[in-house]
Structures are given as structure tokens and as C-alpha cells.
Image (cartoon, rainbow, N blue to C red; front, side, top):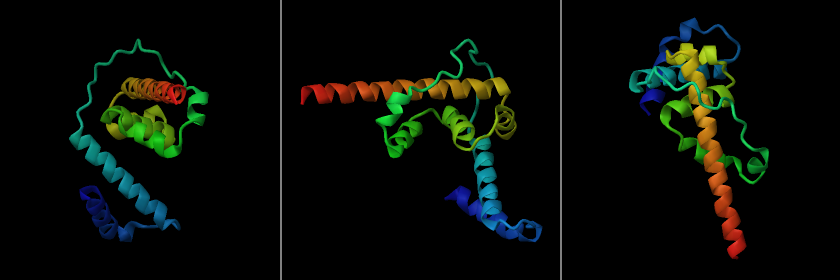
Length: 140
């Protein structure tokens, strides 16, 4: 609520600067940037990361067919805060690592590590869930 209230305060105090034809997009950008500012203020990132982890390991497509969008959303919410933020910016919002590093004030390497970590953890959660589902089906 705090982020939303701050965002709308910024919208109303900046109406004189609005020049676009896309009001919804302009407001969404203000809300997004306010949320990023909030994350920057309240999250401490570790600058020293292990870069020898497996990079950009794909999530098995077979697994994704068995999951609904809501299930994936719930799994993404279980990711650590920092990795979830980078994952959402890269995968869902389409930002590049350089843009993410500037937004979150972290290095490009740290952004890549968080994405790799998020993908690895999501893959483990999906595989764990599928194993559980297979066991449940076999017992039935």
C-alpha cells in the first residue's frame, strides 16, 4: 500500500510533466520505478557471488505443460527476494542484465547470478512437485 500511495502522489504531483498519449503506461512506469526504489532502499545485495554456477540452465518444457500459470506464480513467490526481483525483471518484464543492474544498483554479474539461481531453484521446485504428483498418481 505504501508503494501504491507514494506512486499516486508522484503521479498527481507530476501531471504537468505528462506528454505521452499513453496515460496508463506512464502511470505504470511511475509505479514500477517507485517499487524499484523501495526495493533498493530495503534490500541489501551481496556483491560477492559465486560465478562458477551453471548459467542459464533451461527449465524443462515437459514440466511446464503440467503446471498452470497460477502454480508457476506461487513457485516464483517462494524464490528469495533478490533472485525473484531479478527473475521478474528479466523473464517477465523483458529487461536486459545491464538495465537490471542500473535499476537495482548491482553489477551485471550479480544480476546474471540471481537469474541463474532463480532458474535453478525454480527447476528444483518444479521437479520436486512433479515427483510428488507422480507418486500420488501411482499410489491411487
